[in-house]
Image 1 (cartoon, one colour):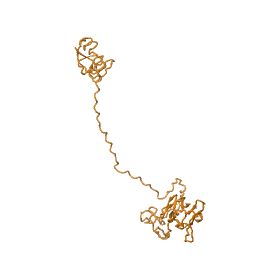
Image 2: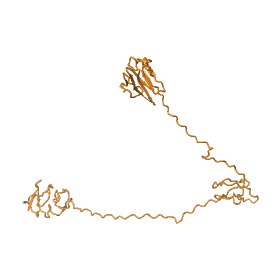
Image 3: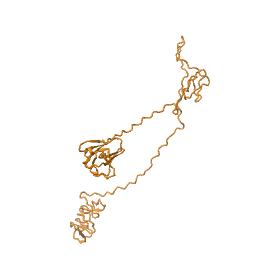
Image 4: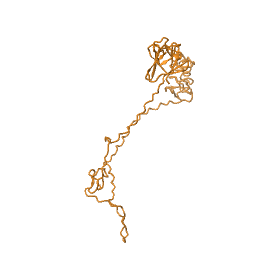
Length: 327
């Protein structure tokens, strides 16, 4: 018969095989050649009933279920590797069981309601008057027990006009509902105490909490400290403008801060050099077109334009250096 050789391992395989029985290589497109081996009926290599290659111990591929010959390493149909152990009979897959039938759960039982509401508990019965215990001794009468003074008999019609509960002639208010009762004949009426309401003008006025004290504003004490001598020049409190310059009676110049004793004339301070302005708690300095200018922290102040002053700022008028202080 015609056979084909596996291009991978060279083993022979029948024509039409899809995979090599020895190595599992694909045999698609391999050309057939005339074979000289034993036929399929011989005991050595055929498909007869001999002990080597018969169908006595039939096997099936575990991958596709196709019949395979004993001793084959791979399935000729799908190429699945075959075990070299004892032949295993093909076991068909178990049938798929049908889906379990679902049944809805039974509805919950309807609640049972009583046909009529339960009867209220009986009200306790109180004895109208205590009874003396019975005495079985016939020789002497029973001794009466002292229960205090018996209540006065109620006159006919002694009922509360509001709730119809029994009342005593001496009652001022009903014990059951609190209704005010008119005094019975023969009983003095209690004096009525006037009740004051919030709208009564005679009531004392409610006390109001005291107002919190106003915040204490620190009193500022502006002053100038001469850097060269350490002298302190206090500015008069209560003023809003302080003129700084040189005193000159001839020209009528009398500034608030005279710098003549502190080198003002030698330092080039003008008679009306600058002025310090106070606006609330803020201070500023304004140059009055001086000859040698005014500087704050070494920055020139434009004439006629107030420049803010802070505590500790350096003020230079000409060549006289001062320090502005408020604390």
